[in-house]
Length: 445
Image (cartoon, rainbow, N blue to C red):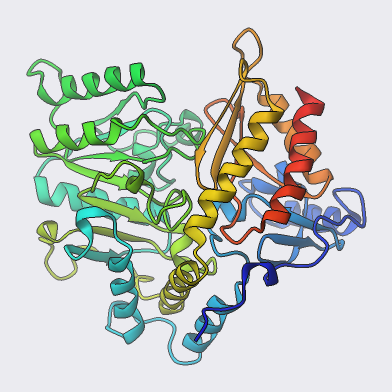
């Protein structure tokens, strides 16, 4: 049986297509209604003022009938697109049988774990265990913290400047951004943040710094239980580290009996053009956290995969009410099958190269840097004096949504234009979207 329709049949027609100015009157009405009744913590409509009605593939329709090309995909959640029919078919079949199972075995649960093993990176393939705890990436990070502490008996944690790992207590402790932590300290004690490199020179400095933390008897730091690192930083600005960085971390972790944990929540499940971004470096982690794309259709699911030698928990060692979200597991199986059947990893690599080439042609290499792997792309922007162009990125984002394309931002200063299109975006859609994005760049830089 073929795994669903080809990617050019997944989308709403005629994108981008605008019926009104943005925001339209119905979007205005619903946004105002939301302001009256929902928490002030709501964030995304402040940057892109639309109210959503429907979405398919790489297209989104708002309540005013405007159809957008989606270069954001729910912060990298919808890797096989909005409402992928092959994924939804499996989800619907599952919901008619059973939806919530805690951790009782079902065929779907066990099939999903075996499917994850089939795409596991490096030495984890065939040698891993999987634990589900809660529905989010933050939950997966919390589980990995418990795993590392339980196996090492140590309490310290090492993460990186520029990191984002989530918003729960432990995950927020690993996160580097001050704006996320303001008003919530104290968090977990014993957390050290090391530099995250983007050049060879920075890489040598970062590895030297970490070696000092781990091996200098007067560093003032206890050896941590684990090292948490994004193989490609997301919120930090789509930062791709030098090739020798992750192998260097692997060596330091091994030499000092520290667990190496990769956060593949945003970079995994095909986002970078490989199943997991760590595969670009050939380094196998001791554990990796997963969420976002693994639910297939945007259904919430978080998990930790770790080497079986660390499976030292007893019954109930890590728990969570929603670790039995079987429709999400069925969605994950179907998403893996869809990606494999339609060769979307290669498609993501090819389309990503096209997008980065178009962005490089539209920008000045003296004041911008285009970077990324696959469909995980960032454009960092500075003025000639080295000041971050945060307002420029906001203006480009506004230009794009006013012309029917949804893009986002990232980076320490908000000066990185971030593109996370679904792996099912077609070349024609990419061309149409890039015509608008590059016009926005040229109009504001």
